[in-house]
Image (cartoon, rainbow, N blue to C red; front, side, top):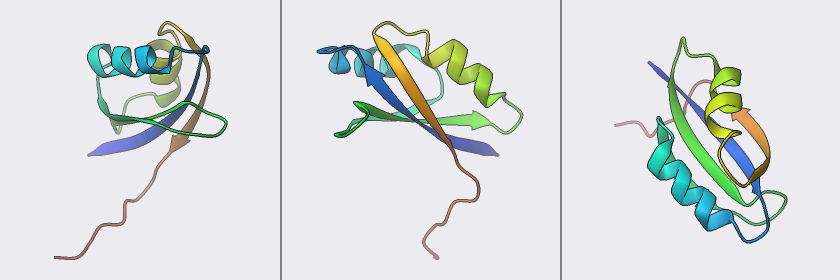
Length: 84
């Protein structure tokens, strides 16, 4: 079973596209990265193993990427899906 987390990312000015490409190419467990408007430049979705330490993943694998200024992590619980 996997846990989905969303990480809002604030980038250095003019670097959002570079950061998005870097995450997609170099960070494991990434699902999608979206450009956003508002307080953050990007929204990245990751799927982690249930036993993986979320804080360690974010601080070591995401926040250390070049040109990232700030992050805000949203941890998810039970997904709601369409019935078949």
